[in-house]
Length: 117
Ligand SMILES: [Cu+2]
Image (cartoon, rainbow, N blue to C red; front, side):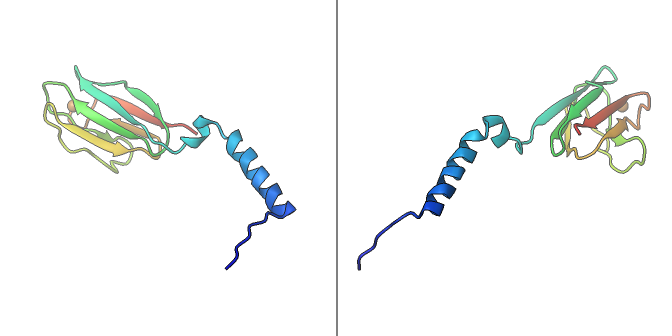
């Protein structure tokens, strides 16, 4: 069977458009959906950094580097909590919206997560 491959003018045009579009996207645009992981240290009775801005879908890992048990709890609605974290324990969550959080064991310990708009 004979097979012949021809490109019509329209086909050539679409091919050209595709090449132009592909060459226009920068590396930054191609990795826009890659999520990041951030760390919040818990030490000296503080969350560090106390305020952190992330993109929706990013992960924040809380690491208890203090000598006391702490937790990470949603301050406004108590919608989520890490439960008590012993020294050296880690807990992580995926962030999709702003959150004010605190340690329910030591209520003066507060932190804030902000999602980039
Ligand atoms: Cu605490």
